[in-house]
Image (cartoon, rainbow, N blue to C red; front, side, top):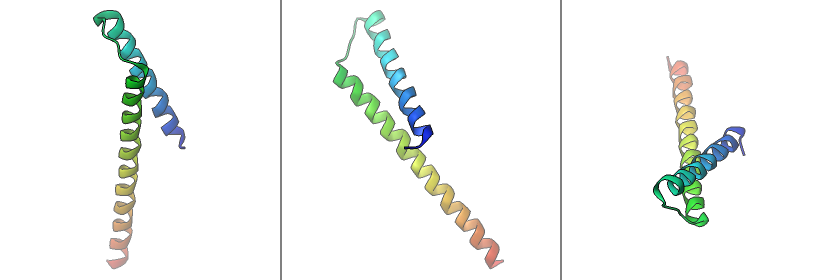
Length: 72
């Protein structure tokens, strides 16, 4: 796992736990631990997928630039 993925996991977990704490404290609404985990899991998957898509797009762009320089 990449270091930035680890930091994403930490950030997402802290965010959702803090959000749950505030909801329970201020709105008297609480979710189960399973529900909070599902939110964390969903967001982590989205972040990793978005970064993989970004890396693939960058890689194809670099390939296109390199090929265009060889053609010209």
